[in-house]
Amino acid sequence: MLFNSLGFLIFLPIVLLVTFIIPKKIRYIWLLIASYYFYMCWNAGYAILILFSTLVTFLGGLGIEWCKKQDWDDAKKIKGKKTCVALGFILNIGVLCYFKYTNFLLANIRSLFAAIKIELNIPEVDILLPVGISFFTFQALSYLMDVYRDEIYAEKNFLKYALFVSFFPQLVAGPIERSKNLLKQLANPPKFDVDNIKEGLWMMLYGYFLKVVLADRVAIFVDHIYGSYDAYEGLYLVIATLLFAIQLYCDFYGYSTIAVGTARLLGYQLTDNFQAPFYSRSIAELWRRWHISLNTWFRDYLYIPLGGNRKGKVRQYWNKVVVFFVSGLWHGANWTFVVWGMLNGLYQMIGEVLMPIRNKLVKVLQLNRESFSHKFMQTVITFLLFAFSGIFFRASDMQTAIGVIRNSIATFNPWILTDGSLYICGLDQKNFTVMLLSIVILFIGDFFKYRGIVLHKKVMEQEWWFRWILLAGSVVFIVVLGIWGSAYNEASFIYFQF
Image 1 (cartoon, one colour):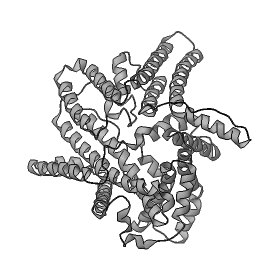
Image 2: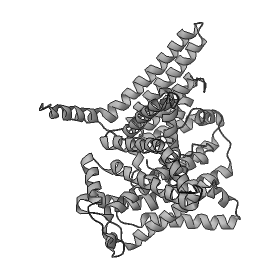
Image 3: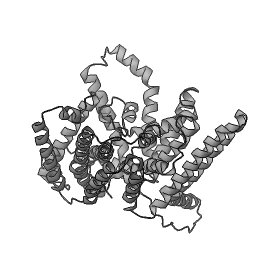
Image 4: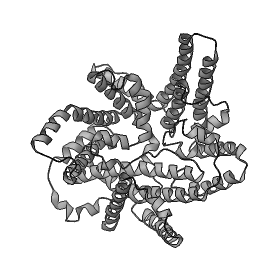
């Protein structure tokens, strides 16, 4: 069930109505039923996988708690707890790897043997990747680690814990919630609050704008160019690459905003997954503001356990290489995703290595790092670097990525900006104009967010008549412009494939 489908717009009001009618003490049971129904709308069999992950980590948490209470010496307790964590990780990561990486591994084995002139007739395995498996697996594993670290209690009620793993607003594409945040909220159901309803609706509206008005419209242009990349050169591909960065951001930011807004309607607060990343002045800052729940997961459960920055620069850089390699592979079973992740890690390491030289240049040239021009240049360069890495994220294989890069620099054709050539690449002039205006709205909204100003809260402070006019206008704007366009459909969210 997609957020931008009619089914969800029927499902959500029913869930809300029943949630606030039934007694609080059984509310978690209703939300659990609703969450499993939501997930099973894709494939009923998927429920077995999420149930397996839930059961393994639930028992793992109880096992850790049991070890803590035993009359053992500290070394034995630690060994027992580590065994519970290890079993939980092996079983969950094993299932994740089977569904996500089996064919990737087999393909690389075939390629490796082919390189030494040995042909292996290993057929591909017919495996359908379950929606959101990377997200709910990581969420369940974070609970296990938090119990091990004494940061959260071991939940004794299986159904409450099952709701934590399967909570439908963020089940299939995050944000990846920590038990310290969501599990504790689910243990104390909130009261009905009109302000939560208002805030949630405004957040959902903005999320729908990002998805159906902007991301889906940009996708038409990007798909047209990348789908025939060998027929285009120069600025066609450059513009498509820049727009894909916008599409990727708005698609996932839109989903996350709808998810956070949906949870807010129910009275729960989820992690804000994006903090205006395109206003960042470095790649390192961009990654602190991009997909925050995943990046903090890698920081807390991979980077820091590996040693973080505590064991010297060489070890720190190696730890970053590992994190970005895993991050790239997490996004997809393809070497293009690995290159995308490693490239972003390389950007950060180069930035750190060159920092002394940059500091000297700033001093020698008497530059003011706090000036608008300096900040603007840093922001533009950061965006361009990120957009370039997006070529590997978007390309279906390395050959396509290299072809896009080669054709992008093959010629310089600035006349396409004024001769109307761009209007025959999937979007006519009206739709192209709507896309550009929507991008302006996006950057205005992100500017306020970067400054710490929450626009929907400012709207809620206005007079009732102004709010209602703005609400009605926003709905009309989204419905009309979201549907008005070439080849409109209920396009799936990009991050569902992860």
